[in-house]
Length: 145
Image (cartoon, rainbow, N blue to C red; front, side, top):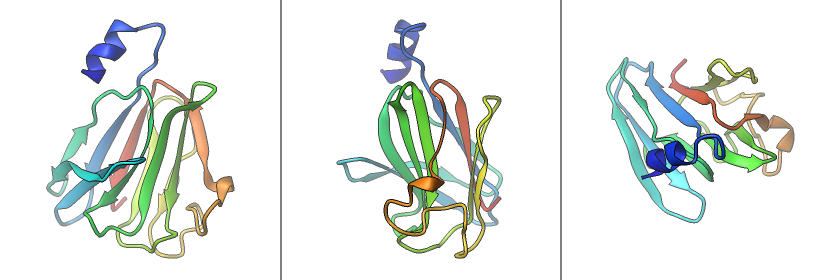
């Protein structure tokens, strides 16, 4: 439905996609949590597999490796001034290395390879770690970069 909405409103609403890539040597359960909702499985990826998200035109969400994944990749799509905001967060701990990169739209690539993750939120409201790009591009969230 959202993909149809994005096509229907082409030129008015920009849509963003996220590609999930499992570069780990084990299965990854990509769990998505929307702000104000519980978590749901976005994808189950075997080593080397990728999957695309649906097109999104708004919303705050986070992704982890499994229900008990401690570190998160956070996105706020079409958040402010037609910008997609993104960051990595290790406030709750660290379980799986992650990288967020932007594909063909500029932006800053952020990595978190271990618990000493200087590019991620280390405490609540660590807003200097949030990055943004124009809404309508594509992100790649890599597990075990």
